[in-house]
Length: 235
Image 1: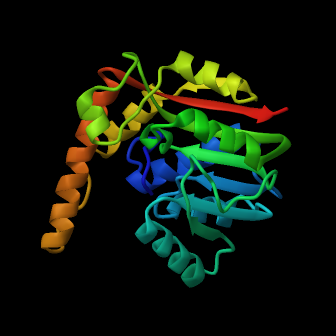
Image 2: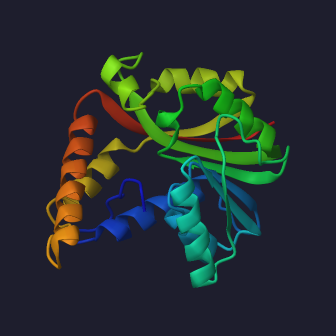
């Protein structure tokens, strides 16, 4: 999966922590069983495939801007026999998603890449049926506007207050928010240095880069950024 692990017990693997995090997000959205679920910024589809296979939604559709991610997700859904669909689309436009077609919208650790988050939130509202639920989990910043470096690497974080205000402006009601930084930081610390570096050059390089990424995220959570979950509904 392509998101943070949540800490639950000593010795957990990266994948166990990530699956725990995905399941926790679905629970905070009041569950996704028998729901039509739309996941925005689904990445390589691993979270979607996990939730679609374990949480019994009526349907599960994921979109991502990166075609190789979508192709991987489609292939894995077919190979594993999981009933989930995927499309290439932009979360700020959602041209492939019909009005009021989703009971639940999930966006996990993707929105910090969206420069036009108000447009993204309008699309969330449009895609949701009245009373439909959303769960958005992502980095927040304590500093406000992104730096030149952050814009260069396509990182556009909001403060927690900006999220609250813009969600309301989009016509979305927040009924729960949580700072998840501590649990995610502990999850990263649990897996730091444990990623595989044996089994060939490619595996070693992947493990080394993975550990560097973990260290980078830890420095973020100890610095200017935190990590928040917002859930609520469309009136």
